[in-house]
Length: 371
Image 1 (tube, rainbow, N blue to C red):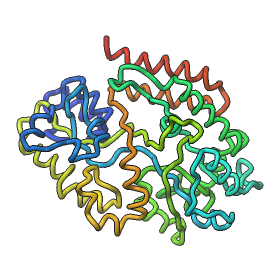
Image 2 (spheres, one colour; image 1 turned 180 degrees about the vertical axis):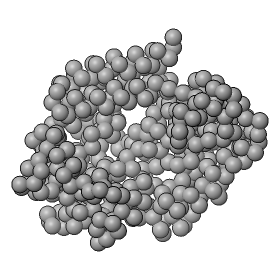
Image 3 (spheres, rainbow, N blue to C red; image 1 turned 90 degrees about the horizontal axis):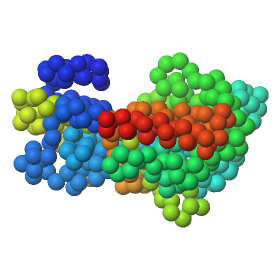
Image 4 (cartoon, rainbow, N blue to C red; image 1 turned 30 degrees about the horizontal axis):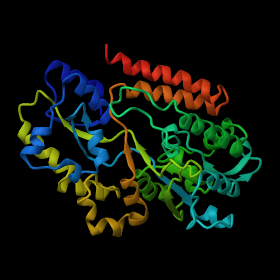
C-alpha cells in the first residue's frame, strides 16, 4: 500500500471509504482518529469477533478497545521449519523426525552442512539461521511488550538468554555471522525468488518462514528446480526452559479498515465482510494456498486436500499464535530490536549491552506517544 498517499488523503478529509492496511499502520491511523470503530457495526450484524476470527488476529485488529479492522489473512509470523528432502536424504537424516529442541536443531544443521571451498567456507549450510529475535525470544518465554503496549518487556533474562543463544548458534554453524551472508549472497540468482534460490537448489537444508512460503515454493521451484521436494514442521522452542512453550509471535496482520470520514459506511462494511469472512476471502486464500483468518472458512475440505501439510502443520500454527499488542510506535521499536540483533550476531556488541540500548530506544518511542 502507498501509505504516504493514504495518509495524505486522510489528512485532506478525502480518504477511501475502505482500504487494506497493515496493523501497525492501522494503529497509527487510529491514534490520529482517522479510522472508524467497527464495534457497533459488528454488533449490529451479530458478528462475534473472537469466534469469527482467530482470537489473536482480533487482538491485532484492536487499538485501545476499538476494533479498527478485520483481518484479511493470517498473521505475518514465521512458525515453520522447512526442510529440503534431498539434503536430508543425502545426509542420512529422516525429515519425518524434525528437530524437537534448539539443541536438536543445531546438531541436525551441523549434520546437513557441507564445508568446502565455497563462499564463506561452505558448499552447503544445514540451516539458514533465522536472525529474528521475535522468533527466538517468545519461544524462550520472553514477552516483547506489555498487554497495553505501554512498556518494553523483552529486556528480561529470557530475552537476553535468547539473544545469547542466537549468537552462540551462529558461531557454531558459521564461525562468524558474515560467513552465512557471504554464502547466501553468492548462491542468490537474479529473477523471481532469487534470494530463496539456495533453498530450491539444495544449498540449504533447513530454513524458517511463514505460511506464504508454501505458495512461493509452488511457483518458484518450477523456475529453479522443478524436482524440488520438501516437508515442514513447527519451529522448536527451548525445552530447557520449563516455562517456555511452542508459541508463534504474531506482530503484523493485514487488515481491511474503514476511514472515519466515510459517508458510505454500510456499503463499505458489506465489502469488508465479503473480503475478510465471506466468500471473497475463501476464494482469495484458496487461490494462494494459505489459510483464512476465519476458522469456519478453513473447514472447507478443499483446503486439507489441496494445501500441503494442512492438518499436521498449518492448523497447528494458527492455534499457537500469540498476538503482539498494536502500537504506532512499533516501527521504531522493531528498528531498535533489529539493530540490537545485528550488533550481537556480528559480534559488534555483547547481548546485555545491546539489549540495554534497544530497550532504551524502544521505550523512548513508546513514551513519545504519551506526550
